[in-house]
Amino acid sequence: MDVGVIFGGPSAEHEVSIHSARYIVRMLVSKGYGIHLMAVDRWGRWWFDDVAERVLADGPDVIAPPEGPVSPRDRVPPLERLTAVDILFPVLHGPYGEDGTLQGLFEVVGVPYVGSGVAASAAAMDKPLAKALFRGHGIPVLPWLVVMRKDVARWPSATVARIEAAFPYPLFVKPANLGSSIGITKVKSRSQLLPALELAGRYDRKILVEPGIPAREIEVSVLGNEDARASVPGEVIPGKEWYNYEAKYIDENSELVIPAPLSPDIAATVQEMAVRAFRALDAAGLARVDFLLHKGTGDVFLNEVNTMPGFTQISMYPKLWEASGLPGPDLVDTLIRLGLERHAEGHRRLTAVNP
Image (cartoon, rainbow, N blue to C red; front, side, top):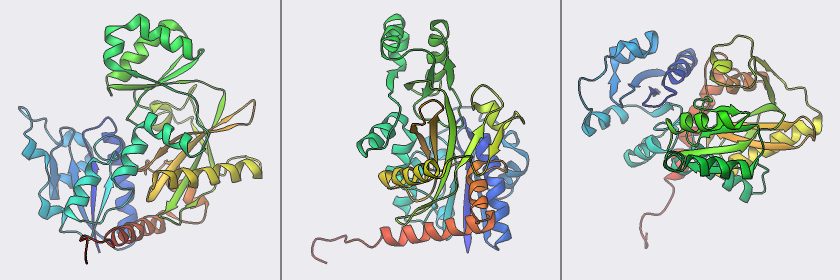
């Protein structure tokens, strides 16, 4: 079976995607799959064959920046490349690859792919939208506030006053549509708030503001389609004050504790909530579900759902499944099967009023 592995993409998580693709390719090769590499550069151009192999091996700098604006035609892959494989594995994180954009293209072309569909991908990527959806399903989330980038620029004082009226410090300020903790700031005082809003606004027009609570960070991996199941929970102990980009990918002092030292009741709670969140989104294939466990009260809050979580050598998603008895090669093999099943199930629908 031939698998098209798509990686890179025009998002701030471009390099993380390349690291994830390296891991997935190794797992697929170990299972005997044929690999077709498809690299998307930072400007949205698609590359194949030797160029894609060089990007995977050496990183994004092997591709030179365009000399001028990239035309819309250059940002669309040749459809014959997409249809030349049995299934696509879009190993892209963040906007463009994890937000339903590419998934819509795959649906139009009719090619099976790994992971969630358009609606689940889009909803999970938009943090405020996902919070509203989870709250509607009775899943506890922290309160939040949405601030628009243009409002920060036009009415900075009023925006600060609005936030301070809603929450005490500390706060977390985040781009609404991004991952890997990019563009996120922990804000401890008024002097830090506007710079944090401006930083988040560089990545998204919509900004999420949440209260900061003393919490342990618990993560659960979910696998399946309608019959999804949860892994053992793990705990992130960041090497920094909180689990920012540097703590995730650079600082070697961060620690992943698997399984997380939790009481049986709390472990069962986060596993059950993870599957509920997965089903609330109508997600498919895989997701990593992140929780905040209040250190004082013991309350559990759903933080976010990642429909294409990191697959690097140190990423929590594959490590949790390995600890649950499913090693990397078998995990990737299962994801291929789930993608094919979801595609077959999705095409079992009527396309005429009177069949």
